[in-house]
Amino acid sequence: MRFKLSTLSFLVACGGAAAAPGAVTPVSDASIEAAAKSGQEVLSWGLSTDGQRYSPLKQVTTANVKGLAPVWAFSFGGEKQRGQESQPLIHGGRMFVTASYSRIFALDAATGAKLWKYEHRLPEGIMPCCDVVNRGAALYDNLVIFATLDAQLVALDQASGDVVWKEKIDDYAAGYSATAAPIIAGGLLLTGVSGGEFGVVGRVEARDPKSGRLVWSRPTVEGHMGYTYDKDGNRKENGISGTAGKSWPGDLWKTGGAATWLGGTFDPKTGLAYFGAGNPAPWNSHLREGDNLFSCSTVAIDVKTGQIKWHYQGTPNDGWDFDGVNEFVTFDMDGQRVGGKADRNGFFYVIDANTGKLKNAFPFVNKITWASSIDLATGKPNFIPEGRPGDPVASADGKKGKSIFSAPSFLGGKNQMPMAYSPQTKLFYVPANEWGMEIWNEPITYKKGAAYLGAGFTIKTINDDYIGALRAIDPKTGKIVWEVKNGAPLWGGVLTTAGNLVFWGTPEGWLKAADAKTGKVVWQFQTGSGVVAPPVTWMQGGEQYVSVVSGWGGAVPLWGGEVAKKVSMLEQGGMVWVFKLPKAM
Image 1 (cartoon, one colour):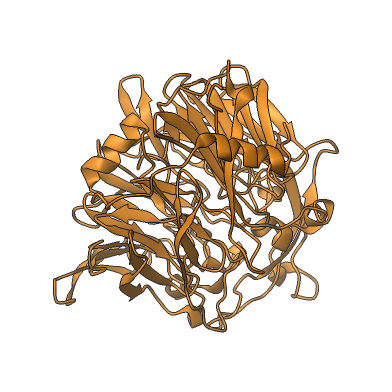
Image 2 (cartoon, rainbow, N blue to C red):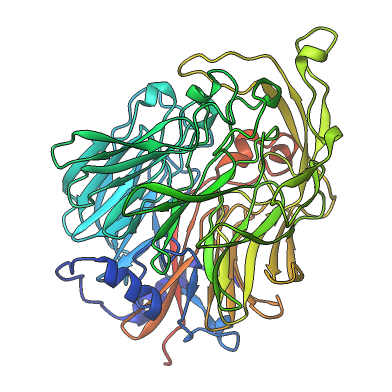
């Protein structure tokens, strides 16, 4: 479905004048939970803190979605039109949406009028590995809080855009950055760090959202000390993560990576926050014998104490850059609280959310070369030895190990694009990709602020007709119930609703909707640039709105090898699009 500008203007005009947003109502943990249950507002990344991305709204359904039409569109402006991965938040008639290069906008959610803008002043020398993206903000009290590419947190007044507090996370010159949306959990602001390709040390931090004061920090590399902090900022040891010297050789743990760059989820029913930890550093696995905890793991943290309650590691001794950062989405299954995770490594895991016990594991992509299966008794992968890139020390020249073809590629069976879960259909909706890579290892030594890989690679296609596929997956059986294939790799997230709909975007610029039970595409709209962000929906003035950010970029055009060449015709951009059903005339 396409609309000319005149049609869009007509639709906006027919909507009539909307009242400007009023005074800000403070956001609390209770209001975040209530909004997730009602669907009236969007107060958290993931729509709910458990990350289900399910809305109970059903004004827009499979029967009437064909009438969904644009209401307004807003451009981020300037020359910074790339890598728009942000999920908007909606509260009190305002939309808060971040943009590339560490910007945030407050817009009138009904009209798109700009209320204010904050553009963070970035220094020279920032080192984001995978484009200048930002994935969203958090709301608490009267504040909107987001992270920046130079590893800072900024809290602004929701009404005025004035800076209330600003705190440094870490040193950007050492490779630290921050791109994830913070989350609120038990009255705390939880954040992670980016920078695993530069030998940083991953961690989760909890802060007082009103002041930015640190409350606790929990490293995600085994052997590092966790801390709690008093109101004066004095720190106290809170136990080492894991056991010192157990899963890392020598001193490699000191620059071990395991960055928590996608942020986390929180389940009020368990009291636990779930953060994924990225790849161990360096990529060359032959240098670091052992499991290299807590890299490539989901780590469950008690938000009251900052202690790790359990962990599950998907890829021990990772040699393929299979970051374990992907979101852990909690849901009810067979009377138990469990979590689902579609890992970069190509396997989908169902894990007890309270204990970390593995319940089920199965492939969600068609080609996996590094492991044959997951042992459900031990939770360990059954490695395919010849599926690991070779040790450069064993090569003739000592400079390049044996090159192999590996699938999935290091960009993963699923990457940063969040999946959705519907308690109605009991299905996960996973934006998956089928691709592989040629990968080899090289010698490497750590240097502060320099890339710390020890590997080379080229991303390659597997199929002629498609790379991406939105897949509806049954977590109990592992069955793919339906799929919608896509020529380019999928890089945007998913939304599902009680209207029996699934919304997602494509790099080709389409925002699509499908029947959640059958996968039949029932609506689509061309946004003008690639969609690499997750859609949202909310109610305002008795009408259901749907929104998505559009703007091609992210890791694929930067790291995608042959795939990047295949999609080189795609245009960058920076727009927010908002849709609703037209009023009867």
